[in-house]
Image 1 (cartoon, rainbow, N blue to C red):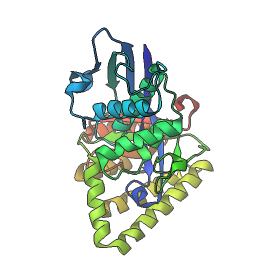
Image 2 (cartoon, one colour):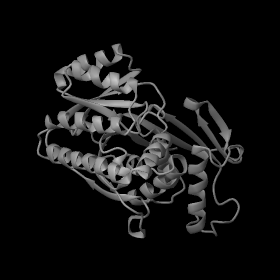
Image 3 (cartoon, one colour):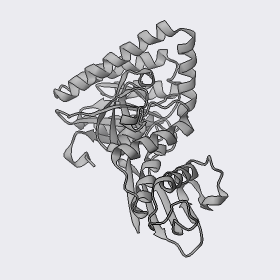
Image 4 (cartoon, rainbow, N blue to C red):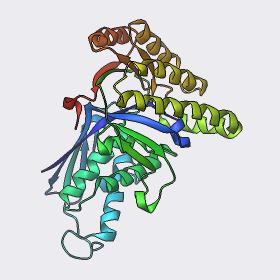
Length: 336
């Protein structure tokens, strides 16, 4: 048996503006994860079981653009063109064994926690290990970014990056190049000077990234000068946040979150449900709060003092959050 796991992720600062070349900060959320198991199978073909989405199927019966099928097909194409585990021409029939693949995930789908990227990363790492086709983190990241493009149109690249590296990252999107393997941007891990606590509240509403990213692009195309200025403001907030995190001045993040949320509201990517949870968290004692991810649903985050985490989480549930996750950023136990 070959097993692999990948964490969820949450964006702290910079969503949407990151698509336009401004920095963003994001961290892994190890409390939720995608898990893949691969076994040799007696049945011909590649069989996939993903009970969370009621999928039990042969790969060949799935449409080629199915999210899981796309990962497997693209991986097999990649390995066929450059590698043969049996020492034969990889394009020959029978180069790959019959497989049974089980995929499970505790990451809510379409909620801004990187569910799709986590499944992709866990699956491609399990396949590369099981089929003895080694891939570096950079190669996994580049592969996952290409899959993200299939499903999200113009993704920032931050989901696949945080999930692949499993560390807090400072990310700046830039045109892909052979030197970066096409992963879509420059990545820097950064040091957390003092651990801090984040409460994540899920609205329970799906938040398709493609839709919100597309709508922001329409706004930008209509008034480029205006929105470039907004993106600059968000980028500066992200820079200040990184500096505060590295210097251990984490309480400063609260005010920066509040500023960032106002700009995201202006961008039309918030929603009444997100705004309600953000205001609830602040009223309950959070140092600051904002939406996280694509918006229009999905998650919000709140910076809290550790002793207030439970009361803020309870207030969010009472205000309509469907689930709450409390995560400590920078603690050794939270590292992958």
